[in-house]
Image (cartoon, rainbow, N blue to C red; front, side):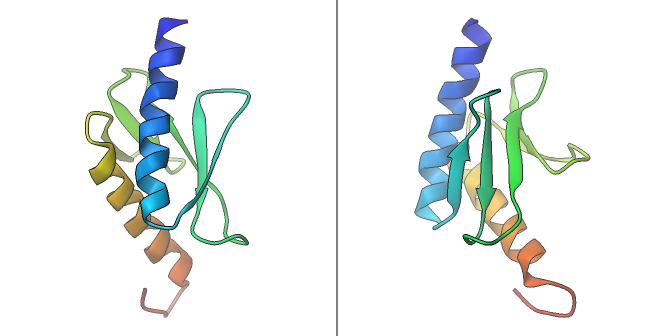
Length: 93
């Protein structure tokens, strides 16, 4: 249970940083995870803590990750990811 609480604390810190970028965030009731989207109608991206407890991970391939010790930089990376992803093919972010 301590890991669950620790993960929640890291995710709350990340939420605070994501909000500064104008990103819409929501917390999962079922597991320690955060959903984000650039706009109200954008596709959701789920962010959670990896099995080691050391990184935020997003994207299905779990290759996009950032240390939980730096939520501000993680939020900046996620904001950039959303901007590029939501620009669509052939459009510049």
